[in-house]
Length: 219
Image (tube, rainbow, N blue to C red):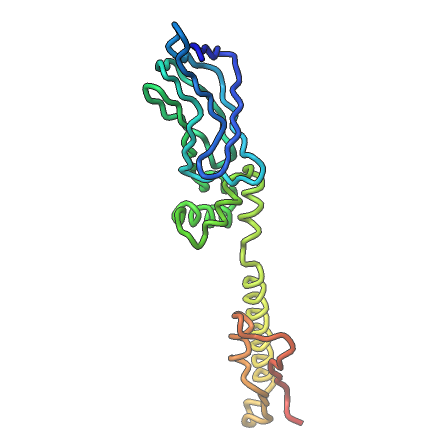
């Protein structure tokens, strides 16, 4: 018990536990001392082993029976989460505040997913995404968002476009070779449904190993 002074050059280390639990400095009266606190310096927050810190978590880190004066400073927990102090007459609390993902996006892909994360915070289905990403560095967040790009779908679309171009080129070449002056001759045989096959190439309907199509001149 007694009065406490935390000087401006001091560092106050606080471990954060589950369900709003944390280290706490409790200052109580003792004899002639009222249990007052004069605070300053910097608070360093660290999640305890196995603890996931989430946006809007609230921790009580100091109580002073005789009142308190002064303020603390701190730094961000990650690229997204930052503690903000809440002061009352006898208590100092720290609320975890989430920043925006969008400013971290360096590419169109990253910015698109960052905007989705900003809009959907609080949804229970996507909560595990925030549990992981909220505590990461900017570099890790950017790499993760970039990895979500639908590159497989882009490849399928490119294959479908190439197939359509090849088919069009074949028909143009075959028609150009026909003897128009003496009447159209010869035949173009189409096996299967090439237009449907090309459509499937640019979607997820095409199954590996499935027959696609064929075309060529009749003998």
